[in-house]
Length: 234
Length: 312
Image 1: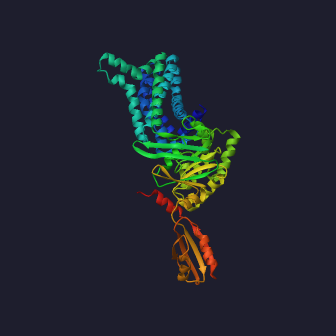
Image 2: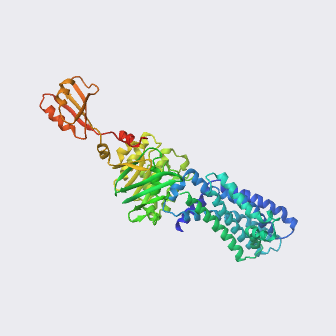
Image 3: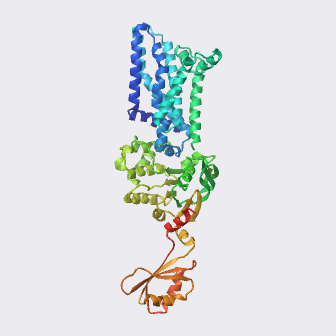
């Protein structure tokens, strides 16, 4: 675990040494800020619901851009060979990179707390769903980070990693809405498989262990898949 | 110290390393030689734990790679070919990162980073991004990476490839200075380099070991003829031919390129592996000729290398 923290520290710092972090955060805040404030007065409600509803659409674009370089770059320049011959386990490497990404998502969400503060000045904000929303956002962001890392282990090309990650995350966000013509039993399966219903539950302020288990399993499956893929390259 | 048994690696159908057995003693500088694609890099990658062997075993001290890779990695410093480093990191940050992963902390860490910077000549560039460095400097950062916590074993994959002659000498000096009390395995296809730095040479071809020994052993033990160079003052070529013709072991006498006036330079080849020097000295002893030079030459490493690794 100490090794994972060393890798975490390096990867997290890397985000802010290069311009990627600033660009991604700016784009994220621009898009969410614009849509949030554009609908805030029309809805005439002091709530962050419209902001959280956007996340399943915005995260599939933003998060793969953050994760795409994590393994693709190492594979491309060959630095993985130097990293994996240091006394570290592959698990530590994957975990460190994953945590760096989760921390980045958290940093990206911090400025949006100002939306909540702002809404609480204007009206009577119910903090329950806000806290739930942020918990859901971090879980959703973590799940998509894990998927992005998986996409990054499949290829040495960062663009391909970005697109692969985006497609998988997008599919997970919308699978239940895209398959409405399927018979009901099949649909309920996809409904469970899709991330949006779980996210919406938590964002409403209902923290159900089933939803948390869903996100944790997505993270586990994606990270385990990354581990298997990297292992198969040896 | 390092014990390798029947090490084999397949890439799909392709057999890159085919049943290598190798024992490396503590304190030896071993050179892995071989043409491109012979399996040197693959062998090193398996030794350092980057690749897993298809079959066979590697054990280092009391640890085996299958069970205790982490302990082995701690003993080992590895410089992969052409030092693939993170381009956007500063040299200092990179060494700091590696030192932390290798478990160094606080004052000891700073001390090691400083002494590595001194040894590898990085002091002036500690705050430059690695991407901006020349190939030679990057190679030195790679060396510092490999040696940062003073590991027992150093594995260096073509440490001097792509460097200019001055840089090659610098890197070679560093290797030799640390090689006094470390076990080093290095690969190269520059034969003179192997000869200059290594105690022992292992030639690999198509995944198999085809020769193993010190440079002298390889040169002498490779069998075939040996050549003795002789310079004599006095006689003519035919006189010498008459004198030596009957002597045992001498297969051929040829006149070498002309030396200074009055000096005759000869090249005598032996028929077996016998030492001709004694025979020649005794023959000339009885005459009033003056023997100016007498030295035996084994096969050059280049010749051995070509013979062992050529197709067919």
